[in-house]
Image (cartoon, rainbow, N blue to C red; front, side, top):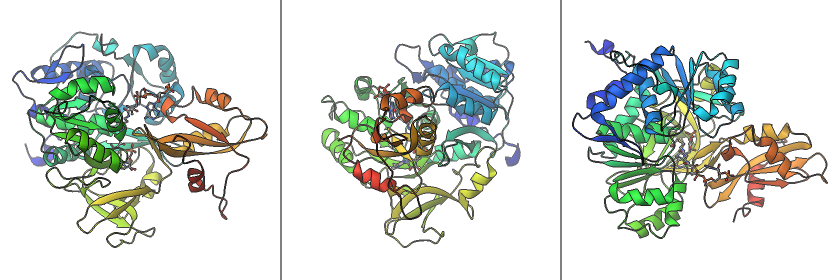
Length: 505
Ligand code: MLC
Ligand code: AMP
């Protein structure tokens, strides 16, 4: 087969590397392990079910499902069938899911059995042809049906889409980042080498599987290595500590590391078989890095990435891992630090990071203007403020985008402000992130009521309850008579952040 007709389906890369011996892929507490030798057959059967429900190559499948081995198989079955996988945070409310369904127009929604009645109605309203359920324990309706002959792995070109991951925007409307098979494959292969992945690695997986970090970075490395994965339903300190001694790699957001450090059972002995702790998705405080080394002898490897580009930079595996830096651009990723006009800045000067490379996404789903606005001469504008040292190491010193990162989840202030401003009794609001020991940043709403004598925090939170996912809801609400503004009339969030910086102390 010539190079241009070869199948570029990411699944095909994994399939070719699946060990045929008795190695385990997924090991979830209380569930039957999934072996590599049976993996392709299981994924093919699920592909048949998807096809019976009308899924075809290039069609979208939206999934809002609990983390389980079957949920991982669903992702792989979508790849295998050539469909475009769209995972959603399980915390999203029906109102939020409705937006994603109407925007992406999938042929199939897969949800949890307990949500079927409510989301089924939402899906029907959005014109989604089929709804199926998936349940980690019993399989759900996707597990039904007779198995026929194994369908072939769908043929996909490198630039065809494997997934769309929604990421919010400064306008408050979420955008679907389109990721191709080549985007995902290139990033996975680079990370596999860069982090010196080994076939005998055992991955401790406690991240959610609806974001880049847990779904792509973690699972793709394991699949390339034919490695075992301890698949935990969520991050639970006790469970993580009990599995650490039989694991060799863990990936986490900084909250994982601060929570582990709070537990006296975290020590060098618990980490005796570990070779690599990776942190990302939010800034790791240098003190967390130092304390973790003191307690365990391990230097956390911090890397930096985003939904639109997968992993962008990483501290080195062999060289020095420096706290507070996110390391070097990964092989194949070009990075430049520029000023507001796009002119490159000298070493040491902070500016906007722009990147280029095979990992950079194909644009936002059906939003050509937004896509165009986030590229400059072919470079993707990350919106992160970065400085670069003489060796080429990057440090993230700020964000140009108005974004809060809470426990590794992105929260876009504009979205919360729009919901709060629409409430009766509210004149306006400003949503900010304040230093928070557990989540890194704590979502805080500064609200100007219509009547200064009428302040109703409980009422605001109750009204947001079925509109916004729990993690987006303000942890605190502060009432003020007016918001500080600059001469252009723009709210000075930096003034508010300074004024309330001790709120969660
Ligand atoms: C849960 N809550 C959160 C929250 N997670 N609130 C703010 N921020 C969060 N991240 C809410 C819960 O609903 C609950 O509300 C309360 O806070 C306390 O819950 P908890 O029991 O402490 O939460 P827990 O289930 O332990 O979850 C915390 C967490 C989780 C940090 C383990 O959020 C998590 O797994 N985060 C990882 C996010 C991630 O994977 N990011 C990768 C993005 S990819 P209440 O009020 O009901 O008690 C990306 C690119 C890249 O950014 O570079 O990787
Ligand atoms: P997301 O849109 O969820 O993919 O979030 C991507 C954003 O997370 C990036 O643009 C950064 O602002 C932030 N981020 C990811 N990794 C790191 C890190 N190691 N340090 C600081 N910020 C990070």
